[in-house]
Image (tube, rainbow, N blue to C red):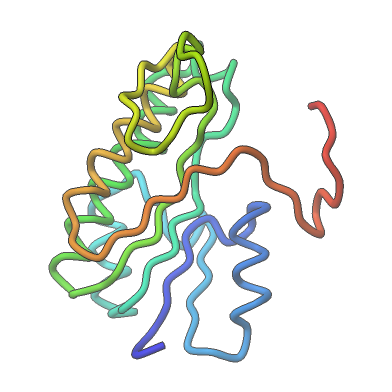
Length: 162
């Protein structure tokens, strides 16, 4: 790494795994209490202090069904946070790794497997917020968007239905 790394959502399943793997490097793994990614001011203050060159954004609203009832919170955490991180990353010349989903991004009407160039057609609000987050991340050169299907790690070592 050519400079500090910032990990958002550091106490979550994905963030804690990255924090563990990158321990001993110039890594700032921050939980919500230390970095509220839904606050542009909090993001700017953190970037000013950390001056990251790599941002691994793992904070997200992941309750698919809950997003329908908590639309504003889901949108702020899944989409607006990425907008703030992109703005700050551009200002500090940082690369961004953003995690999205395949959960309901496509309507399922295609005959055959989907590929990354297929046009998404979100079938729920959670997917809408994740697709919006991708549009923000795409605005930043050197961003990497990863659509993941399922996560597991030491905090949840096997696949389970929640």
